Length: 195
Image (cartoon, one colour):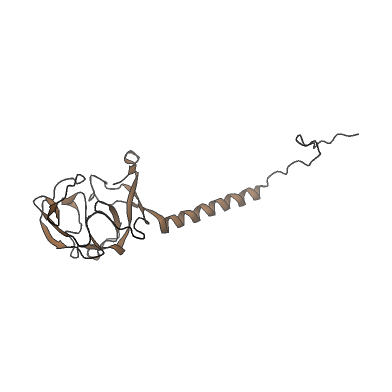
């Protein structure tokens, strides 16, 4: 009697050896994984998150020029609306003739009256406490009342920011906001959540 050279250790029954994986099968599987990953990345970028390189120092010291940031495009879905202090990305006003989206902080909310005087921002007559700004504003502005569904945006580097106080139409409509800035991924030394 001859021994079966393909004997299975587990069941004691003879079986055939496993077939080697073909190179073409490996390439197909790798390609499937790559296509799936690409599709997920596209969906994420189109609908959920996006990134930007900050082209100016208008948000210094919170965000520096050339920092890389991530924005959450779903932050203001449903009943969620921008809150004072949120850092957001939005379309630039036409008068700036800029190819770059802007990154600023939400300061004035719909229906509020905003004024800049005596080195502070006043909302409905009350001075804001802003520990995130680089220096106090050295200009006066307003008072202006912010329309419904609109926001007043300012940079943290108040005296070097082309923000709402500078534009002919100072208000950013909610539809123009592309998302809330949530994270800085570059430089690595400053990696982390942004508020």
